[in-house]
Each structure stands twice: as structure tokens, then as C-alpha cells.
Amino acid sequence: MRYQEFIGRVEARSGLTTDQAEQAAHSFFEMLGVFMNKRDAKELASVIPLELRDTLNGTSRANPAGEADGFFEHIGTNHLIGHHYSQAVWDTLKESAPARNIETASQQLPGTISQSLT
Figure 1 (cartoon, rainbow, N blue to C red):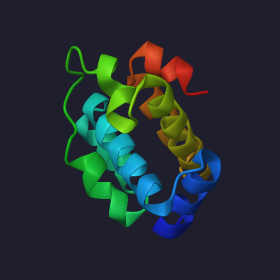
Figure 2 (spheres, rainbow, N blue to C red):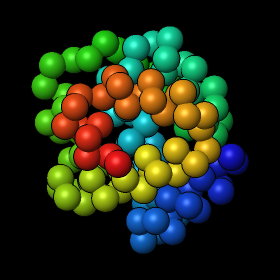
Figure 3 (cartoon, rainbow, N blue to C red):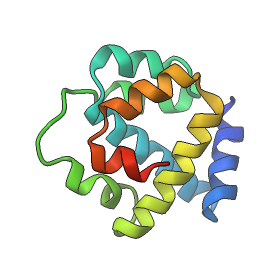
Figure 4 (cartoon, rainbow, N blue to C red):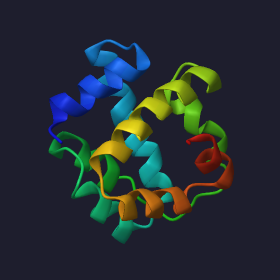
């Protein structure tokens, strides 16, 4: 899926403007990369739009303690809004990436985050 189509779908799901949807997507992939190991983050990055790849690849490190608490707040102005935006990006990712990449990403997220992104 191309970048503009990806962002357009995030917009449609979330009600965000284009600029806000872009920010939400970049923030989501930045936080996702925090929890994924480098190899799996790189593999997922290879199937997302080019404009989002560095955001995911450049931040990967092994499950830092305490990062789960701020996951949604990093993406939105508070937990509830961040969750809504994250869900829009996650659902768009699920449409565009192979199921094995989605499963791998989901398994590496802390349980509270993974379970809330249905």
C-alpha cells in the first residue's frame, strides 16, 4: 500500500486531518519499534510505506521497562484518544501487511497493548 492510501485510510478511520493522521502513524510506528526486536521490526518495515519505514526501523530496541504505560499517550493527547488513533493505524496496518508480520508485532507488544488493539 502506498503512503497516501495508508494515511487516507487512517484519516477515514480516525476522523483526523491528513497532517494529524501522518503524525499518528509516525508516532505509532515509533512506539511499535520500541517493543519489536530489530530483525522483526526490519521485516515489518519492508512491507509498510517507505515514508514510515525509518520511523519503525530507527527506534527498535528490546522491550524497555516502563514504555508500555506511555504508548497511547505518545500517539494522542491522552490514553483514550491515543488508543483511538492507534487502533486506526493498527487496522490499516492489518489490511496492508502480511498476517505473519501482524502476528509477530502483536506478540512483541506488552499484553495490555496487544489485547486492546483488536
